[in-house]
Image: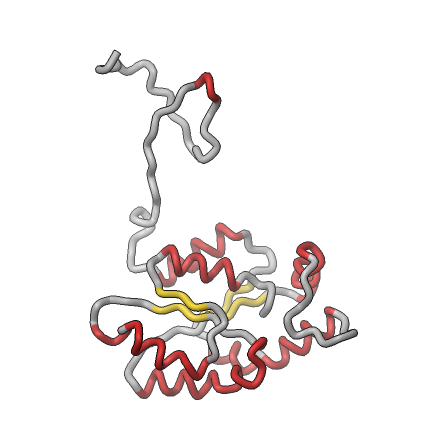
Length: 187
């Protein structure tokens, strides 16, 4: 569903080393997988988002998935969903128009039309995530757990750096450990 976190999910896949394309017409997925070299055994992964903005082109998604299976390429379909109320709030907060809303159409009817058009894809999905009450960090961790080849400890980034207290704590620090009690070899 538009507004349910597709862009955030794509960023997670990008951070995990996937080759990512946003809003690709489904008919091009097989050609892209061959171009990127998905089936070469190199361990490359591809993440593609598709939505209804490409209207007539989106109808080919079932055939595109079948062609991936025919070429012995494994895939998983992730469907991100949210409640209508949450989607309406998100669109009102960022003041963007729903991508399927026609001239003069209200947001509620555009959302329900999109939901009806995506019913078949939701039924095909391997993973369905309802992001209505989900924070971005929760979405990231659930996608990492489901699709990363690394353990949870390997996904953690640790940066160690020193700073001067007179300048204040660094903004990017999540955890600060004061080690001024240790002898300083350069003093």
